[in-house]
Image: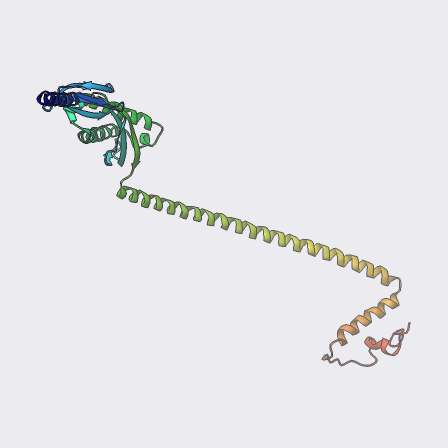
Length: 294
């Protein structure tokens, strides 16, 4: 009885082990490939519970999701002989696990092959375009051309390229420095030209201002002389009209003015006769002394 029970237990254990070895589960985020002694037997793209031969067959799992690829930066020569450091990236999906396994085995092998393919396609496409097109709105067409060429090359690998982008396209460091130096020299030359033009314009403005100043001053002086002449003429006329009304007062006023001018400076020395007509108002307020009798 004990032997029968032991045999039954052993049989159940064997059945469980065989059953466990015969079943495998595929997650919805994965796809599988059944291999026997390293040779692929069949692909299992559907998620769920599946069967395989126990012990002699194994299961390899591959991602169903989109995978990222970041190729190394490379330097390319454009059609106009300009050099660019191109930094690209791509996203791909495994669409045929059997082809994928037969061609690249795993994701590491896929990344190595895809890096070469993407860099080669980018070099080939960019080698036929100019820098102006790379920097223009035609860049999307260039990227699409790279994507088409890469997809054509990776179809035999069981891979589909979902997206390819040029993250950056920059001048090499030495080229950038040379361009910077050239731009700096050009800007310095333009600055010198602007300063020279500014100096010339400033000189013209100063010369015109000086000319206008001379004209304005001359016109002002002319007008001042005219006004002074008119004022003097008016003053003379007023004096004449005023003094003509009283000739004696006019003579007296003129004599007083002469005294003020001649004797106003205390350092002046004059030698005159006391009977001189110049002093006629000293002895007589009316100036009668010294006048010649009529």
